[in-house]
Length: 438
Image 1 (cartoon, rainbow, N blue to C red):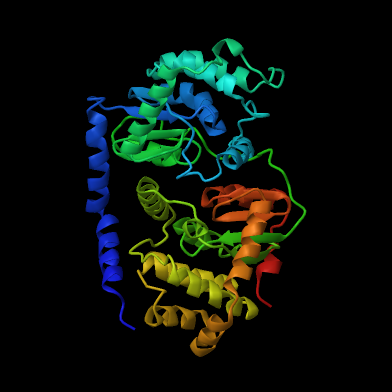
Image 2 (cartoon, helix red, strand yellow):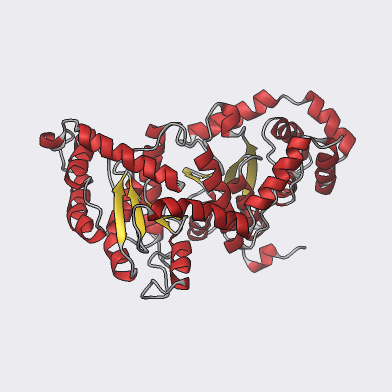
């Protein structure tokens, strides 16, 4: 079957997008807009006061000011819009757990958040600091406010003197949010530098690498690194549920990183494919699409995982892979199936909606192509994806890749190192004798 012209155009476009020239042009376009506001070299920190990750960033701000020899400007932004986070309440509830886990992972034992904020506390913070952009001045006022907001003995009604809505504050928040989107991002706890974005929680190592290239850091090591003795929870289960999507480039990156876990740990990995969020009715705006692809390229380079060219499998491609997956599962080839398929999609630009490319990948897995076609024709896609989607939601999660090990449920390929640390301290690691083939 001939690959459609639109798919060929897409493949050529992604090759150009992911080239060094393409990435440079994207960053340059963002930075031209930033330089209209700040002419001199600087960083910008965007904070969403309703997001626990932003309070973690506030706690690190004095250290960043000390370590980085560039001005840092701070912008408060509103909570994420539904087009980038489809369930804001679930997202914020999960982020509280996530940030506390990462604080423990980094050995920040002096820092923890408990409970949930209310609108009065957030309004108080906004009123006090919406117009403060200098990082040093902001930090001086924000640190005590942030700490007080998360104290357990603060009354739920907060400081009602600042609880009234302020149209000027709301307007400025919206303006800051539009600026952030114009520069290429949409969440809080993010640092902007020269057209590129860095999550304070997960991408400081990338930021330090960039800043070292220009001589803008005073020390060589990143201020956030895993501690040798993290106070993380242990698990008493060796059943790992791996929620995966064929359309998720982060899922693809995760596959490469956990491939040998079953050999190194006493671990049974159950692959649970789900429908892409777009096919579940969740929008994916261009600003998010572009960030995801460029971030995945950066992460892949760091981890030495091939990435690009890719061919978007949305629609028929995803459906075909999902329908054939149970055959691979029956033959105990589920992990090999998602590995070969995702590599074909995200690093070889193969179009899995067409027989020519899909048959190549299915054969590489070790499956019979005609049997795969027969299985595809009979497979109940809805039953399979609904069960896995329901299990994902039951775990308190919504996106992929996600992992559930015992009672621990975490989201994102950025949490793979944390999850492996949990497995290690839970003593799931196999001995050398167990690893050797008999």
